[in-house]
Each structure stands twice: as structure tokens, then as C-alpha cells.
Amino acid sequence: MDSHAQAFDEIRAVIGDRLSTRQADRDLHGQSETWHRAPPPDAVAWPETTAEVSAILAICNRHRCPVIGWGTGTSLEGHALATQGGLVLDMMRMNRVVEVRPEDRLAVVQPGVTREALNTDLRATGLFFPIDPGANASLGGMAATRASGTMAVRYGTMRDAVLALEVVLADGRVIRTGTRAAKSSAGYDLTALMVGSEGTLGIITELTLRLHGQPEDVAAAVCAFRTLDEAVACVAMTMQIGIPMARIEFLDSLAMRAVNQHAGSDYPEQPHLMVEFNGAPATVRSDAEAFGEIAEECGGQGFRWATSPEDRKRLWEARHASYWATLKLRPGATGVVTDVCVPMSELPAAVAAAARDIAEAGIVGTIVGHVGDGNFHCLLLIDPQDADELARAKAVATEMSRRALRVGGTVSGEHGIGLGKRGLMQEQHGEGWAVMAALKQALDPNGILNPGKLVPDPA
Image (cartoon, rainbow, N blue to C red; front, top):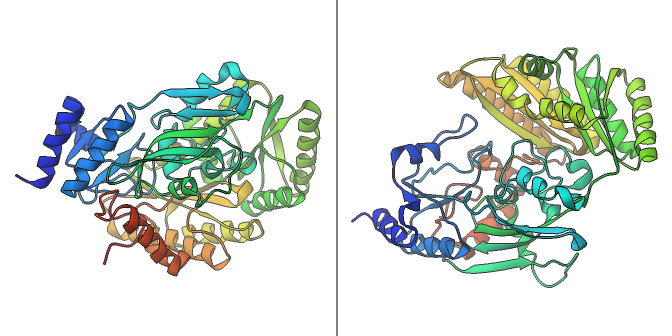
């Protein structure tokens, strides 16, 4: 009997019909949001407890069967594709909010809880979880990819939000990393190691998360600019002065056209900034006024304020819908999606260079971003059957990454590495990439956890 088939028989003895080899289930877990493609996995399992995850990994380790963690499937760099076959471990049935401790401002959740579900659960506490990558992603997946999003400029990323983890290692051992304390200097920071490891070092089965108080007052606005350079210069000046933004998002003119067509809005088809201020009413007013002066100095025009919760919700839904809205600009197209992050002083030049590269390549593409921390994204629309167009789009994305590295930035601020940027890891990390491979070898010597991703192939 094939070793993978034998592993599946043993797993079925543990979880019954929550292991499936049906084609429909495999196909559902073999899809990507972007251009990345791979054959479907050989099987899909839906564990419901840490003990089941431990048993499944121990079985797969014995049979050297690949295991790929799966949340909501919203990653953009092919992180969860089963490039070497094996088992997809769908964690979405582990979706319980285990505990909320308002006095400690923390919550303990299973990995299948989504960020929206957690915030719904927190409504009566006066607290919220601020990490907002746009998609209603699972918190386990967000930790695995070190997600961030629109509010990272004020509240940080998943690196800052995760206090502790429960993780199942490749051989089935269960470890706990971190504590509920605000800080610790006791040994290696295994929590930080696991956050962003993209499922290559272990499967997260529980998270302890830092929460924040709901702001007393919130105001949001959208502002148009005549040129891309003016909008990005406004961002750089705002951050250098130190105005405490909750969010500051950029959309170029093509992205605004897509948003208008998708949402039925009537924003000018010009570069825009979408901003939000949180805090005490007087602070919000003074911050908004200070930003307004900077925006006016940089050529900003047509401020639209959104002070009611409904108006703010519509504003940010328009921003989050920009990905799907852009895809509608070219029906039948798929996206080569990339992000980079650069020092704030380098942001205007980096965005301008990306725009030039897109135009020179003859690609239809938008630029948006969480520009308050130097992170921006391009969505390049391509015909999936056109190899030349794909090659041109990939060349644009690669040059964006290399330009970021040349000015001290990173090839990804939040999307992660997955399949799409693995070829750039040596350029960013040098010998550090070999150190990552050594860590992988130590924790997963049989190489079963999300193989073909993030680290070099074993020698």
C-alpha cells in the first residue's frame, strides 16, 4: 500500500469521516486567490482538538506524508498549496473563543476563529482586536503569515498581537510558547519564531492575543490628490511630523475607478488617501485638523468626512473591496499580487518607480497600500493563459522587491513568502536563510510541514 494511503487509513481511525479524499474537497483546498497554481492535495482532514492534530502529525511524520495547514484560504502567495501532495489540515472547525480576560486585555482563541468573529464576541467588553488585513481571515492563519493590515500603523502587526501559542510540532509533540505576562526575558522567543513561519515549523492550535480598548471617538475621511506624488508626499510628511494616525491608506486613480464601479460610489478618479483618527474627541479633532493642513499643503482636495459608524463602515469596505474591484476591471483575468515595505523616507520614490514599471510593462495594475508604515501593494492583471504577460508582471514584481532591498526594505511587509517570493529570500537574508533552514531541519527533520515553502530545499 502507498505510504500516504496508509497514513490516511490510520488518520481515518482517529477522526472518522472528517478525513476526505473526495475530489470536490481536494479541489476546494487546492485553490489560490492569485495566479499561483498546484495540483490539489491527496486528502483533507478537519481536526477538532489539539489531541487530534497531535495524532495526525505523528502519523504523517512516520509515513513522511506532507501536511499543509489551512485557514480561510485567503493568502496571496500560494502559502497553502500542496505542491508535493499530501494532507491539507483544515483548522476551521477549531473555532472556539476559549477565554476572554478583560482585566488583562487578552483573549485565548482556537486557530479557526476569524478576526470578525472575535470582535463580535468582544462587543460587550469595551475591547477589540485591531489587526485587520482586509479579508475575514482566521487568526491562526494570520499568525502563521504574520499578517497586519490597515491599522498596523497604530496597533502593530500579528507580531505585536500574539502573546502566547500552543503549537503541535511535526512529530506530534505539543508545546506552549510565551505567557500571559506583558513581557518575559526567559529564553528564546519561540512565539516570535512561530509567528510568520507559514506552517513550516508547526501547526498552531491555540493563540493568546493582546486586545485594545475601543476608542472614545473615531473620525475617518477620504481626500483626493491631483497626482500620485502629492498623495505619497502627504503620507511621508504626516508620519514624519508624528500625527498619530489609526489608519492611512493609499489608492491610486485606477483603484479608485475600480472602487467606484464596484461599489457605485462617485469618488474622483484620482489618487486618494483614506484616513482614520482614534482617541478622545478633542484629540481626534486636533489630529484631523493637523492632517488637513498637511494635505492642503500637498494639494489635497475634496475632503469627505465619515463620522457615523455606518459611513465609516462603507468607507473601509470600499478600501477592502479594492482587490475584488480591480479584478472586475478585466473579466477573466487573474492577479499577480505583490507587496513590499520600505523606510518611510524611501516611500515616495518607491511608489513612483513601481508606477513607471507597470506602465512600461504594458500591464493593467493598481497600487494601494498601508502606506503609514511604508507598505504598499500592486495588483497586476494578467490573462492566465498568456505566458508572456505573466513573465512581464513577474518581472515588475521582482524589480519592486529588489528596489526595496536596495534601500533597506523587505520583499514583503505582510503577504509573506509562500511560493511567490521564495526565490528572493537569499537576496534579503544572505546566510540568515541557511540559519532558517537549520531551524526547520531541527524541528521538522523529515520535512513534512508545508514543504517547498519559505526555506531552501534540503540538500
